[in-house]
Length: 312
Image (cartoon, rainbow, N blue to C red):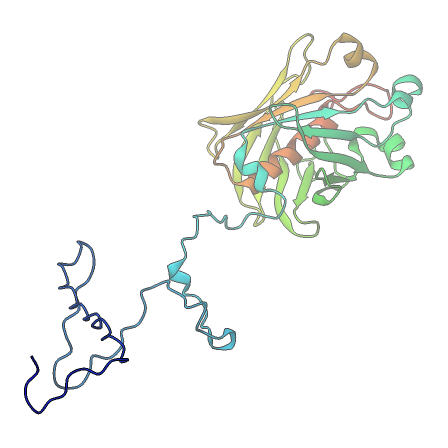
């Protein structure tokens, strides 16, 4: 029964609405997982200044392009690449080999009618792959009148046709009675810049050569046999140290077969040298091989026979 003085609920009023849901209390944070940083609550006093981003981090989304700084060169790992010093261009490959094969091309006109043409050579590695091509540059009169004594300029090109070496041989004497005018060959790389010389050393009955650097300082010596002729075998010129006490390589004229040896002057050579030998001296040894070929295994212009140590 209603209290006196307070009227009861009047008819027609809607029933009371259900109560509003009460907000749930915030869950208590649990302990942080391992590996995450726990930052302390800011205390009184000045705030902690913002720390720079870690090294190598770049804000691609927030940093404008014109305000982006250049990357730190020390943050990038660059693979180690050894850089050679003092190596002429296009001779880098010679640092990786210790043997060169030289094959002289057969000239059919020279073989049949005896007309002397420019010598051409293929320079190969030990696998038979061509690395250089060499061709003599000379005139017709000099080739056929001077024979093996002729002066020439040898042009050595790489597989792309670029001249990488030039070898110049002046007109000199080969007689052992003229020690003041013996054979000589200059090696240039690139053309116009001298890197070494091959100079014949006087000896009464044995071929000897000095391998010199650009300053005309003797580095190695080449000693040949008394008779630069062999039937059925190779002819070897030993490459020795400066004091001739130890051999470090060789230049070998290889036996090409009876028909080629008799009817042509097409020759095959092999050069062996230490792997760590200076590439400039390796190129000079290549020039020594060409000079030996002209001096002892090229047909002479007068009698149509090859030169030898005794007849020179």
